[in-house]
Image (cartoon, rainbow, N blue to C red; front, top):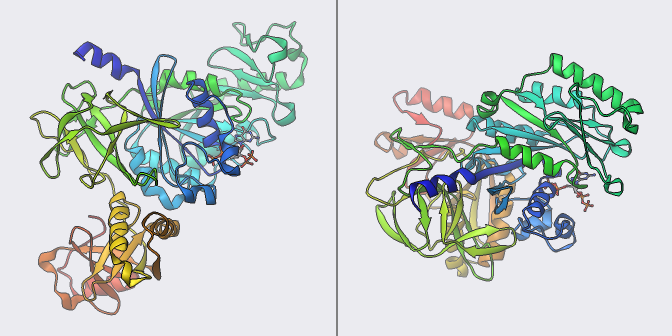
Length: 525
Ligand code: G4P
């Protein structure tokens, strides 16, 4: 590709994540989008998931069993002249770290809210992660076909609870059984609900924002209420401000119903007008890598083993930040300086994996990995060495001692632990005094997934002994004296061999600091 072609290709990319509290409708809306993109022919894989044929974006057995989405997946399709990359995120709060890393690889996010429930705990948590990333957030108020809360009430809640300004792009005309349509402020029209039989779906608004008086809807009191509400919003609401959208300080809000495919396509089209193109990425040396820079760069934000249990494969997911990816190209792995050839790459189209030949900034490629990559690794081609900013690591708070149930099966036990730890599924520590394996996680469900996967994917039954909550603090190895370890703090090393203490509680940590005032303890590596 020459420079002009590269720029044109990059300009087409839109890479985003969909976040929601479980059951708000993330999978349903993703499927609708895939339908528009012509990638799947039939809706209803959500239902299929529940009846055994799980949704195409949900790979793992455990997800089927629990009906939750644990890991993130990637889907690519073309729509309206754009190439779209959707990154799915786990809905459960125990997987916030995985979500955060996924959000490092997108340029914007869609927040799906159940309009009957409003902001739920996980919406809040995921939103805060987006906010930390400072990316634009677009809101879809779902399930309008059911009786939900008043639209104004929902907007208020978003503003108050999440602390972000809202700008309603459309407004519901009725809801539940009384749903008539959407007053589309942005496109200046009314979108009628389930109107296939009558032909026209979209009715234009006049300069004053009103329907033709001959239309029956104008006689409906619901329509007149909407006009009143719109007037109120025009006067008292926020202005549409693109700069604020870009900085993540204002969220455009769309109402609709994913299940009945109402308002979803309008949403997608409008969203794509504002969704940012691939962004610049900062290196550790504060250099800004532009997506149209010629030399290829990217970083690994996720590693997943056994996506296809029959093939025992391991895939490193790379977000491309600049240049052109060509299958078979040589790149350097920054951490080791090793040169490697990228022969075996894949991209994810809803239900199939295809070998990728070329890809550009914004795209995600999956590289078949034999253990070379770690999460956060930078790869680059060309002479100029690049290292992107570190991906954040959440300090674990829950700990478990772990052993193989069958001592004869140490080999599969070690292999499983090594791979799952490399994926970032859990953290692994080793006790200084006994050499015991200790797992650390942010949430309990991570342990359950670990145990399940050890058994299913590595045929290794594990015994886990809960150690409860601990405060993990790293210590400078120069300052370490093994005598510092006591009954209130356990001395362990992390997988890089760095020493840290697991304190029983904050009191134990204070006690330690008073005893060793010169020792510097840190919360994160
Ligand atoms: P998630 O990925 O965010 O967890 O949500 P998902 O799409 O799986 O949707 C959760 C439930 O909400 C599903 O129902 C789905 O059919 C329903 N749903 C999604 N969007 C809408 C909508 O716009 N309107 C209505 N009324 N329902 C919606 P379920 O009961 O779990 O499954 P099923 O019995 O419908 O198959």
